[in-house]
Amino acid sequence: MSTFTFIVCTYNRVPFIQETIESILFHCAHKNNFELLVIDNNSTDGTAEAVKPFLQNPAVRYVLETEQGLSHARNRGIKEARNEVLIFVDDDIDLDARYLDVCETLFANPNLNIAGGKVLAFNAEAPDWLPKKYYYLASMFDLGDEPRPTEKLMGANYCLRREVAQRIGWYNPELGRKGNNLMAGEENDYFNRAKLLGYSIWYEPRLVVYHKIANKLNKDYLFNYSRLNGKSEGLIEYKSARKRFWGKIIKQVLMLLTFYLYGAYAPSEERRTYYKIKQLYALGYLTVLKEKLFS
Image 1 (spheres, rainbow, N blue to C red):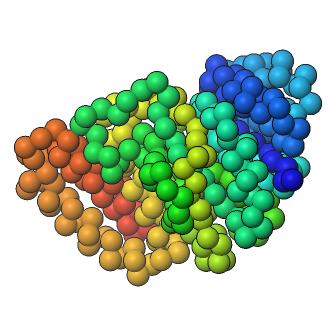
Image 2 (tube, helix red, strand yellow):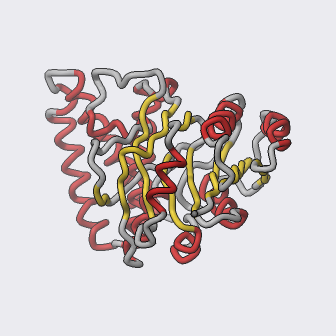
Image 3 (spheres, one colour):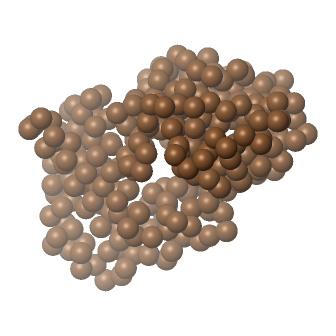
């Protein structure tokens, strides 16, 4: 039977981190093949004290990572993990009761190396004005109810073998969140490198976490994240796919023209939101060009 390490990276998220630890321990209480590793990314809100009572459970460990940034925290989790399979979940989730049972079934297959599943909203619903295509901006992920290969997963819910993580290497610290900065892209970069090494990625719908995202279901958050997501993907492609980067520069300029000529005046709020997200993504992507030309 495989052994598992839950890696939960956190920054200034009391009481979310307490609830997440409680959920994992409650739903895995019947298991003895896991550890729970909390990576505190230099929090200033008393996270260490909040986690301290849980350390009485021998399955729980606390590590302070002072280098700011989610990528640094995830890399520290990979270094510190003691078990065969790494499970990355966010610090504001509720674990499905079957989660570890599903993991055991999946990783009993020696040919499976990377897997992830659904990230569903916890006691919340997506607003009508948010196109389903962009649910991921609010940290929701659902590819349906059939297992299948996929190109990407969400970092709030995925697993991989530790030896595979060591081969892929470290998360890129130029990408990902740093403190309150919502930069992203580190997961896509990581999965792209995994695929280049020949690893396939598997979507398993029974692997479910419930994400506490009520604070993200507003336009200010989603629009800001759209722009930063564009910048993150621009940085990735400028570095690893230069021809594609220049092709997408043209595409982003055309997208801006489409927004100003039509998208801003689309007949429904959902369509206006769709074009606004694409406009902000384009602006973020073009920021990379500006920085590279004038840096």
